[in-house]
Length: 499
Image 1 (tube, helix red, strand yellow):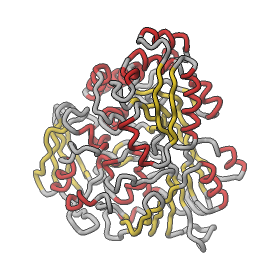
Image 2: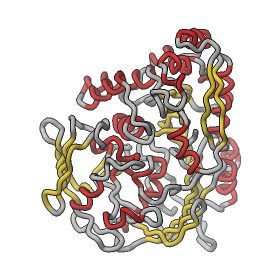
Image 3: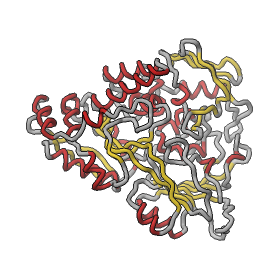
Image 4: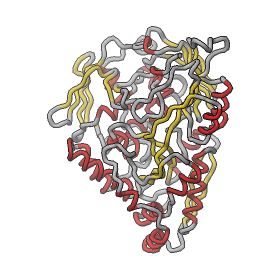
C-alpha cells in the first residue's frame, strides 16, 4: 500500500500574471490523491496531508526552519518537574472562521476526542497509547493543563501539524461536509476527489503571513504529468513524488532543489497476524527483512537514493549503521528462518498499492520475496479511500515517511499510536525501547533512540527500503526558490512566495 505521506505539490499562476515580477494572487497546488477522502477532520489524517490542512486550521505547534517544533496557537508552555504535566498558554483573541473563540475550552474539547475511533492523529493520546493523556482541563480562558500517564519530554512534537490542529467544537458532527477551522483560508467550493478552492480569510489569525488570495488544490496523479505541467508553465512549483522525472526536468532547465530525509518503508499494520497469520511470527518478519535486496531495488529503480535498513535517516539521533550489515540481503538465512517458523514452503498474503513508483517498488520486492517462497499479491487501488480502508484489512503498507526532528514523535504519533497501528497492537520490545527513549535526555537519549531504531527493525515493525532524495521543481520567474523546514519535503504553506 502506498499512502500520500509524501504528496506532490504544484503551484500555478493565473493567466495574465507577469512572468517577470510574479505577484500572482492565486496558487494551485496539486496532490497525488484526494486530500479529504474521509471528510475535513484533520485528525483523521497523517503528516502527508499537512499542506492542505494547514490552510484551513491552526495548530498548537508548527514546524520551524530546521524542522523543529515551535509554539503557534500555544504561545508558550511549561512542563512539570517530572514531565507528566504540560501547561499551555494560548494566543489570545484567536477565533474560528464563524467567529467562535478558539480558547482553552475549545482545545480541551478537541483533546477529549482522543478515544474516538478513526482519529488516527490522536491515537497516541488515547488510553493505552504511547503518550496517553489522563486528563485535560482549562484553568483560565487561555490556559490548558494536560496530564500524561507517563513522562513526555517530546509532547510538543506530537502536537505539531495535524495532531495539534484545533477544530471548532460546534462543528464536530459536520466535518464530513465542511471544514471548521481558524486557518488563513476558508473552503469556497469542492469537487470531492478532484479539486478544492480556498479563499483567504483576511480576519484570520496570522492571515498576513500568507501570500495568495486564492488557493486551489487539485489531484495530479502521475509524476510525468506533474513534470510536464512545470515545463509547460501550467504550474509554478512541484514537490516531485519520486526521482523518475528529475533528469527530464534538468534537461528542460527547470529549477530544482532537494532534501534527503524521507525513508521509504513497509510498515507492519498488523504485528500480531490478524490479517496475515504468518506475519504474526517474529522469525517470518525477520525472514522478510533478509529476503529484500535493497541495493538492487535502488540501483534499478531509484538511482541517486540510498539503500538503508535503518528506520531513522542518517544524521538523526538513533541512526545505527550496524543495521545495514545485520539486515543485508541474505536469502539463505531467510529460508532457514521460514523453515524454523513452520513455513518451509512459504506463504501468501496481499497488499494494496496505487499506480506509480510505489507500485513498481512493490512489484520488485514481490519478485525478491518469491525467491524465498513468500508470495505477495498486489492489488492495485483505484482510489485514496481504498488505500485508507486497506490499513484495516491488509498486513502491510508501503510509503515514504519523513521523520520529524524528534523521531519519538514519529514513532508515537504514527507507527505506535497513529494510523500505522490500526489494530492498537503492542510489542514488548518496541514498547520498552520507546518508554526508555521518552524518559531519557542527553547521551542517554541517543542510546535509547538507537535501541528504539534497532527494535523497530529487529521486530519487523518497520521494513526500511531506502532513503529518498525529494525534489521540488519550480519556475524561478514566478515562485521564489523554496526552502525546506528541516528534512520535510514540503515547504510550509506560509513560506511559498511569488518571485
